[in-house]
Image (cartoon, rainbow, N blue to C red; front, side, top):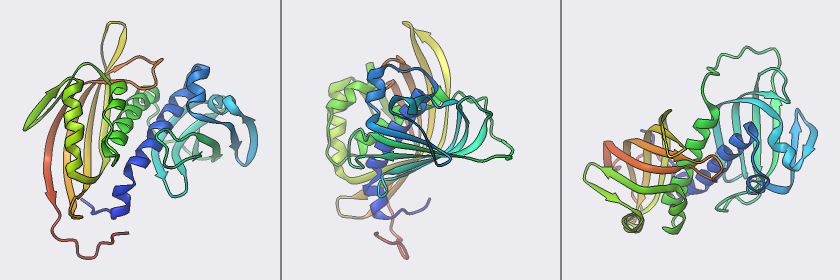
Amino acid sequence: MELLPELAVRRSYLEQAQLHQTHRWIVASLTQPSQELITQLLAEDAELLINGRTETEGAGVLTFVSDLFVDQLLPSVETKSLFIEGACAVQSNQLAPCTIELKFRDADADFPLITAVHVTTQTGADITTDLTLNTIMRSRVLALKHRWHALVENPVKRAGPFREIIADGFTMDWERGSLSGFDALVDWVESTKAIAAARHDIAAFDCSQADALDNEQHYNAQFEFAWSGISQEGQPMQAESQHRWLVVDDPSARFARIKRMDVHFKVPFHIVENTTGTSPE
């Protein structure tokens, strides 16, 4: 596992915020969200550029695609932007490889607003991606994942915002302990202060639809995370884990919610002893 620069670890919670906003934007681009949900994502003067030409403004930024496949997301807190590499059908045209740049107004905001969407498409290129994936389902789950880690990684520990993203009867089990309910989660959030900074990178991800209960959508999500941390003494740390989540989703809500989280550590938390040749920048 690669040893990351210290700044990349300390800024990770800000990248997570960009990522959860991006996945919410992806879902909104492929559906018909309410005006309230749109205004939660876009700045008032948000613009859309397709191949360098201004097409529309405001809410129209969310309706330019009829299909979208996401291959890679590249956030940047420094430039206040995020690049989506993949394929899209622009304004109902044929699916084509594309790069989409989302520009954000406030890199350090809990919910950074999108100020611009710049789309660059490629013509004459073959599309080899698997377009059978359910982009909406995956982005709903990933928006939840990134919101969870934006809160977990934030150096300012706030338990209150977790209420929005956990379901009634929430449980979390890991190999040496478990918790149930919001009050227990509050104590766990407080315990994360033992680490000065943390970053969770997705090494693998998959999700599938589970049996629906109580008229809500249920998903089974599986993650593998490469975890990077900084101890209170400034030492680099690493770990690797597997997560299984049961996710409950009401599509009209800002985020889906976690019902159950099961965690298995492939590599436990540990101090990285040999840091020769690494940079703190």
